Amino acid sequence: MLATVVASLEDDKAEEVVSIDLRGRSEIADHMVICSGRSSRQVAAISEKLAQRLKDEFDIVARMEGKETGDWVLIDSGDVVVHVFRPEVREFYQLEKMWLPGGHMELREPE
Image (cartoon, rainbow, N blue to C red; front, side, top):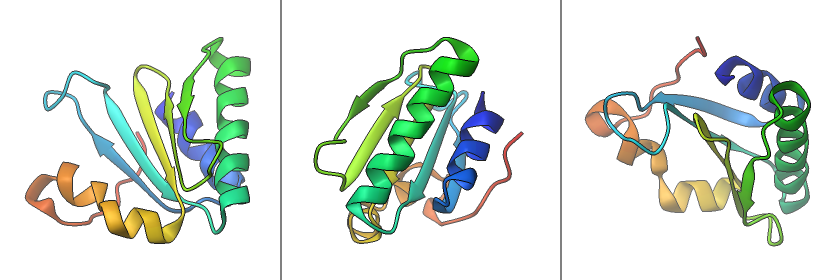
């Protein structure tokens, strides 16, 4: 599922896609994926398309929060949690620093 999520984000031109392995560190999900869209409209579109792909390919109805404003959309598919941000909002919250080992940014390739 992680590879499908990352491919969907890349197909929809999401920027700075980061995958964080949460296995053994959190029970909320196995993976967290964080990315950016250039505008509120793109953030909402990326999120909608990802939710539709998850439904089409895995028959998963992902829970989604924040699509109305388009600043930060959370897509929860169970095993993979995705955060789609506008760049300014992503910089403000800095989720990568909270979850990556050592508290620093590093890009990881999907499995």
